[in-house]
Image (cartoon, rainbow, N blue to C red; front, side, top):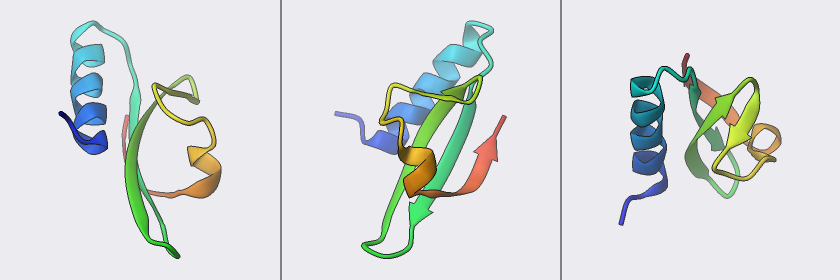
Length: 63
């Protein structure tokens, strides 16, 4: 089974291959440390929780 980061990277690759332009973000939460990767299309989180942008600080983005 794929982890969440691997899922996001695989989905990113699949969408780009189909000429869809997603944005890939990797972010973290400082206290109760967590890190997570997610995708957005037109500033809307896809295939994940829509509150990620409020909970996590993006540190890397690939657009």
